[in-house]
Image 1 (tube, one colour):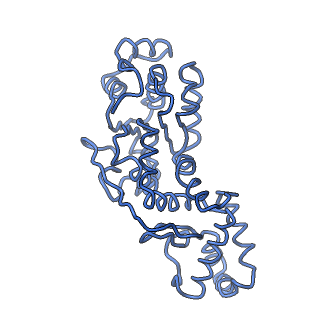
Image 2 (image 1 turned 60 degrees about the horizontal axis):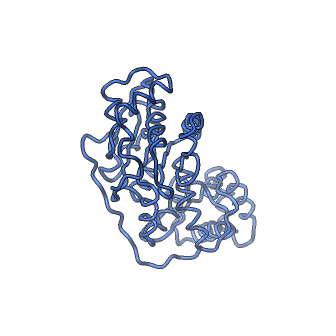
Image 3 (image 1 turned 45 degrees about the vertical axis):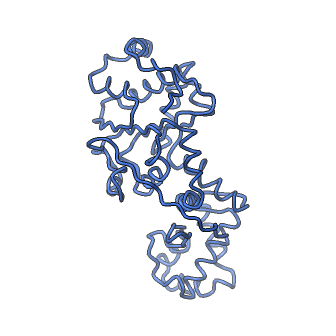
Amino acid sequence: MIRPYLPDAFATHKVEAMVKLLGLDPLDAEQWDFLQSESTQDLQAAPGSGKTTLIGLKLALMADAWTSPTRGVCVLSHTNTAKNEIADRMGLLAAGRSLLRYPHFIGTIQSFVHTFLGLPAVRAKRVEVRSVDDATFETAALRLLQRPEYSTLRSYVGHHQHEGTGIVTGATFTYQDGELAVTGAARDLPFGAQSPSGKELDHLKRTLARRGIFRFQDMYAIAQEYLARHPDIAAAVTTRFPFVLLDETQDTSATQHKMLDLVFASSSTVVQRVGDTNQGIYSDAASVGGPASLFPLPGPRSCRSAAASGRRSRPW
């Protein structure tokens, strides 16, 4: 990889100067290793070890040495709180503030998927995005359910009350066998996809999609379809971001892991992940179908290639 930053970005004298400028405590050996590493790696950080401070320090060093006007650092986290904390730290330094604008990106994994994959994919279908929000989708779905063409599905909902309502309000796109399929919030529907209720649920979901109303989870399936049909998209994203820093890795869900692997795992992008496995909120976070997702990795990262499909994109 041709560095998009000065070769002495992590030189010892620069690290020491930045530590002094930020008023930080002296670094231990592991912290030095992480700061000066320019290759893909994981850092397992214990609670209270100051991982966010360490991330901020590394980003400050990179910002001070960054030279490319079109390629940037991609900083991802699980929560807006963590994202805001990193952004706030960068805003305190003149060099750091450069990371808050193009070509860099600091945001949640959800916002990354929205910005670079999901929303462009929807717009490519000539659909104007009105909302990506579970609560808005729920309101719109229940309103649409009252129309005559959904009488069978409405009858099912009436007989099963809350369970049935949840199937409608939780109707979600998943990427299956090269197509976007409609499932319930728990993935498995209580009726067949080709049953009258199944067909009506599918029609209701796609009607709302054509109106630009989506659930958060839909964006991952839509993004996955987009990547499969247009493999050049992943190449464009990895060219834009030669360096990715992922915070709160232990909180990354299986779906999020899979999406990040599809984009970055087979590329030359340097991906450095920081987290604490003892604080994970997802039981499946480290059990995705490939070694690239395991955290922390015991050695050099293994890469998985994303299968590409030449099939034409299906309209909603």
